[in-house]
Length: 150
Image (cartoon, rainbow, N blue to C red; front, top):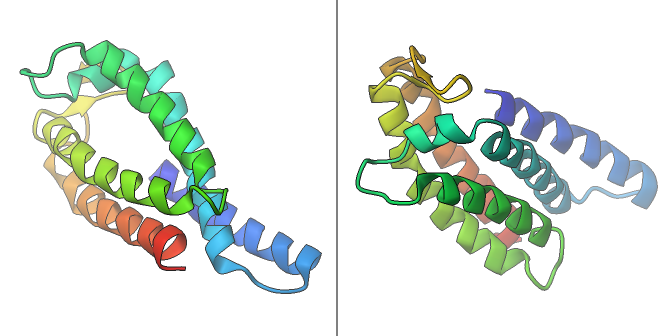
């Protein structure tokens, strides 16, 4: 929920700021600024809640801690790359793949009631998927529309 709130607030603020400064709306840029900010926000979780995020990964995946750090850095790099016209399309496609690839970890976390912030069990459970799966679809559409389509 917090990443969605960050995304929407930053979108509104940046759209308003661009309108004030450039005297026009640039919703695509505002959406990319918002996605970049959201990714920077979520990347912090990779470093603050590493153990809990590692618990979300399937058992067969090796080097879980290292992958959590790597994906945190990836979110930072790809988020920043959204802001540059020369890299926004590449970053957008990679992010779309990323959003698809991480969904099973979110499903695992829900089915096993993983609370990633406390690296414990007792998370929100299966009801969380009613929010998370539509959110992933929304993030994929947001990324496609703002970085690839326009």
